[in-house]
Length: 318
Ligand code: AMP
Ligand code: MG
Image (cartoon, rainbow, N blue to C red; front, side, top):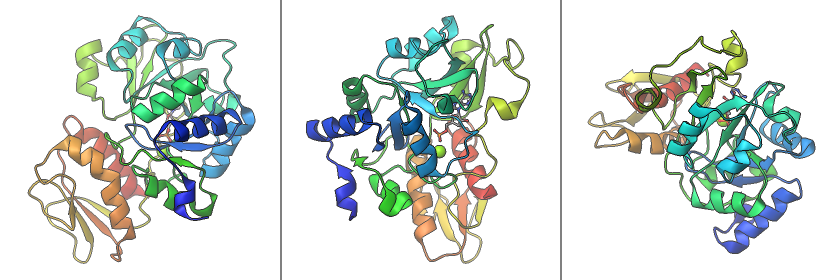
């Protein structure tokens, strides 16, 4: 099957087809404002198993559940005042909340990998939100790539990652934010913890909630169980990566930033939002180039730089 046959058009017919496939327990790659997600209905054990199988994802790594509305989310998790504030401020948008799983919630056990919590997000991408609105079911959706590989920010990246086994991709073009959502754990007894840096920065969260309280009301002392998917090596382009360069290591593909030039540049004007949006696209280009290694320009770690450097460090650890 050629790539084109895997694409669903970004119109009413494409959305209706995607909803029908999902309702029937199938997989669909859907665009979100962060990256493309590999979606399946979250209440079906068999559909969720197909996500893990297709990605080759380890089963200790739980999935983010995408909802059409805050009302839908409240049926799946226990919301307290902090969670309500965060959802009011950032939903729909690139913030995932880890909350206590509500008793009796219709969620396949594999979605949460046996944790007493669930990760929830209402995406802002217009196609994702129309699809979820039409489906009226919560959808589990990790990034639409083989486990451990670079995240997809374009339909072509999804097609390349899965090849012949690729499920239909709802074609939303390039993703805006380009980095996976920020993940925040909200404690039952108050307090919060940043589990994954992302488009919503730690500085913004601190301004809204006060400083992070790591110990108050913690459900567990183990960082491994708390953030099971935050593996040191991830987002691998399949070749060595040299970070924080003012100039390229000789013979490598250089990813520039600002006035540090390269074969490609994340943002010639030094804009971190643009750099975040282009990060995976540049890494995909570097991976596909004939150079055997990759150099990446230095990027300051304030604001969005924290999330960008988090992904780059995991790419370099691979
Ligand atoms: P992905 O969707 O592939 O970008 O990854 C989802 C991320 O959400 C992983 O880092 C998971 O570990 C994390 N996650 C999902 N559910 C939970 C949960 N209940 N508690 C903590 N982290 C979670
Ligand atoms: Mg991923």
